Length: 157
Image 1: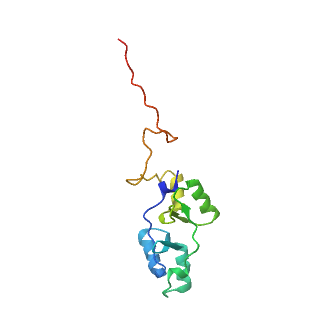
Image 2: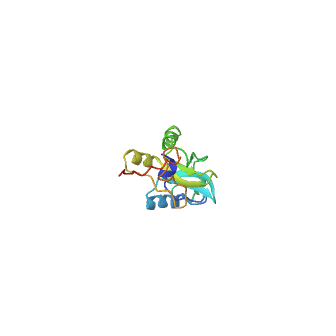
Image 3: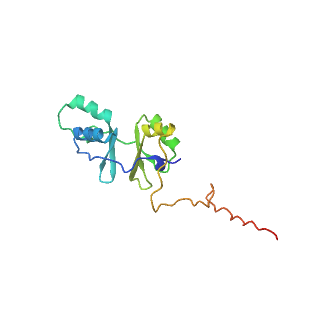
C-alpha cells in the first residue's frame, strides 16, 4: 500500500503572509487541522490547528502572518513510500500530518494521522489512479509480467 493511494489531494495551502486568524477560519470552515505554507511551488512550512490556537492566546487580535508561527523544516513523505513508512514517520517525528512530495519535490498530497486511523478501521479505501497514469493490466500477475495465455479447451469427437 503506497501513500499515493491514500493521500488527500489536492492540498489546501496558504501563503506565508496569510494572517493566522484567516488560516484558522479556513481550517474551521473546511474541517481540516493542518495547512501547508507555500510560496509558489515551494513548501516553506506547516501550521496546525494547535499552533494557531496557541498563537491566538499569545497574540490575541493582532495581525500576525503564519510565517512567524509555522513549523519549518517540514517533515514530508514521498508519494511512493509505503503506508507503514508514513505511519512510522508520524510517530517518530511526532507530527500529525505529512505533506506528500513527488519525485520532483512538488507537493502532490497530504496524509494525516486521522487517515491512518481511518485506514486501520477500514474507513479509508485506495483512491483510483488518475486517468492517464500507468496501471497494471488485469492480465499481469503480481510480478508485473504478462501471464501466459490459457489454451482453449477442445473436445475430441
